[in-house]
Amino acid sequence: MSDQNLESEQEQEKPIKKGIYQSVRGMHDILPDQMPYWRKARRAFEDVSDFYGYGEITTPIVEPADLFIKAVGETSDIVEKEMYYLKNKAGNDALVLRPEGTAGIVRAYLEHGMQRTETHPVRLSYFGPFFRHERPQKGRYRQFWQAGFEIISTENDPIYDAQIILASYRVLEKLKLTNTTIKVNSIGSLECRKNYIKKLKAYFKTHAKKLTTEQKKKLESNPLRLLDSKDENLQELLPNVPVILDCLDTAAKKYFTKHLELLDELEVPYMLDHTLVRGLDYYSDTVFEFVLQNFDAKEEENFTLSLGGGGRYDPLFKILGGRGLAGVGAALGIERVILALENQHKIKPHELKNPVFFVHIGDLAKKKSLKIIEQLRNEKLTIIETLGKGSLSAQLKAANKHKAVFALIFGQKEAFEDSIIIRDMATGAQETIPLKRIVATLKKRFAQHD
Ligand code: AMP
Image (cartoon, rainbow, N blue to C red):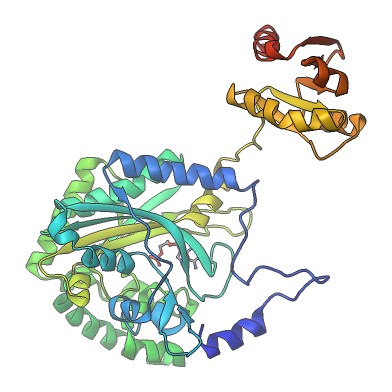
């Protein structure tokens, strides 16, 4: 991390409360009761990834800073102010925590010579954490997770753009999320964009009085960024802003039209948004975003949440040294998908099916219990235990708390005789049976119970 970053981190860190450390600002623990949402999101991603033939890839969290400076662009927000730098002891190793997925994946693709070894298109997917030093707020964190899809090919064909959108759309569909919209636009080639930027600069310069100093700086360094600003003064100016589609050359227009026709063919709903530009230098032609409308009506009316986005990134291969290659990708923000899930489909806390509580009394029983429990679990019985607790009443209390259907009581006498007591927790009725019959007896009792 750079000294500058460290200083501001320290200023902003959460105070240590009652001597207990807090997680780093903007970075969160995912506790077991949240995990069902994460697993659901991860499962939906994995199902879609397998269904459409994507091979999952994991790249390191730490990458050379230069990779992102070159790929994402020096004037992007990510590179200008959001990257976490790491230093080794000598202080000269320019490494960063990865702020996004595509650059690392293209690096891995080129490094492993996939251009030669794989048949194309190469479809890759990933699921992992990313890091940006942004101002934390609801749905915006400094460590966040993304699930992404990439298609790397030897030709740039809009069929791949449509397939990438389809895969992300299917994940949201599998999660039964409603109120989602796909916004699409084309930013054309670098040449188209140069023309557009000229027009954009001229437009904003005629309204220079309404711009803040920061916005004036952005107008010089990266005017496209002004288009996705949420600042109120800019919102007023956006309706009349020049339209990028008017600046596209014939090839870019043809490409975009084909892309939209394919989305129509797939019956993937979308809307055109000519202000959508995305913040990274490596995009060309297609850009898109998945948006959740009215995300939290209670908190803020009409609040929209960007669930994910992506686009075509053919220029990235030139930047990173690959020849004759083209790529398109999308990434969904998992925390945001989970916020949407929590709002729309609460998952009930996980309830164990037919839990059996194992009670032990005495040291010999305790010693033998571990193996018996292991055998019962191997028979797919759900066993709960508190083997660390010695007292019978404490264990029966725990059995009630866990809503156990049966308790198995294994004491000194039973340990000597190779028997066990089975207790019906609802009626309190107990029966002693030989240990070797326990699985069959439990299965029979459950069958009668159901
Ligand atoms: P991007 O890589 O900026 O195109 O972002 C793709 C998606 O990742 C966004 O639409 C968000 O859902 C998610 N995302 C990006 N930045 C953050 C962040 N700081 N915190 C949480 N989610 C994020």
